[in-house]
Image (cartoon, rainbow, N blue to C red):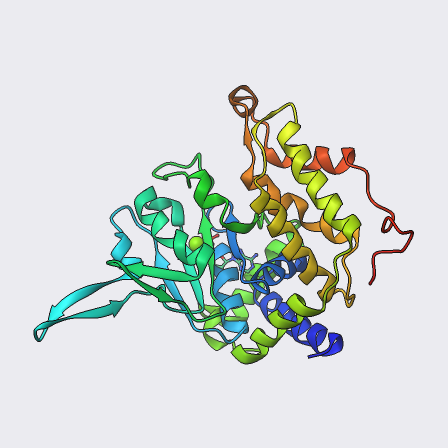
Length: 326
Ligand SMILES: Nc1ncnc2c1ncn2[C@@H]1O[C@H](COP(=O)(O)OP(=O)(O)O)[C@@H](O)[C@H]1O
Ligand SMILES: [Mg+2]
């Protein structure tokens, strides 16, 4: 895989998704960037904004095997991971829907934390333990989850530990203009059915997708000054006056991984500060816990990340006077 081939495949994935999803293609690029490093993505927004649609089209476009779990209040951990049943004199493993490449965890915050946490081990370690036996998942594996904002009724907010496992949290938002709103309606007339994802054929094979992941991991250089920049941003979230608990080091790692994919999608084999700025809010905001008095004032953790992006000095190149490339 070379950079030209990589970009061509990325473009065709983004185009396939945007032929169905109406909105900014940047959100699709960010989702792709996270998944290229086996990162989990959380879509959080009000109902009816195309979250499930985005997740489904994306899974189909990369040719991945995918399973969808609708989270409900009575869903049990074993409904996700699987179980052992006694059959013909011995215990047989019945694998749950988690044994797949892309797991769509739809409306994840409608289940209680115990059920949500059945995903933790798979999300972080790419393995599943069922009754004491550990099974390794085949890669790629990542979770694309959707949830309604936590203030909504009948929801269990994701615990911090669970949130931290998501590489990015993305909010699709409402259509930005009457033209976009109309486009959603006119596409519906064109499709003549409510599930436009049925007819999508994948733009890459699963082995091509693996090769793309491998390309990002092996070919994209990150200079020391970028590592310092990311570290300083993460540390600054911890010192911000509105913050009770700032971003974990896992947040810095997430930012690092996504920026490499973003750089590659831009046709570069090295990361620049703009790559970091592009995804800093999406990678860090959901890991920040505000002081109670700030949260009740309605302040959002996104503000903290925007503040630290203004505060922290942007590097101009490496310490040895080189740019950001190798
Ligand atoms: N931006 C969008 N582009 C295309 N279709 C959309 C968009 N937003 C909503 N829809 C349509 O509205 C309906 C609800 O979308 P869905 O993905 O189920 O919402 P959510 O999961 O956010 O509640 C679907 O039929 C979907 O096709
Ligand atoms: Mg939905």
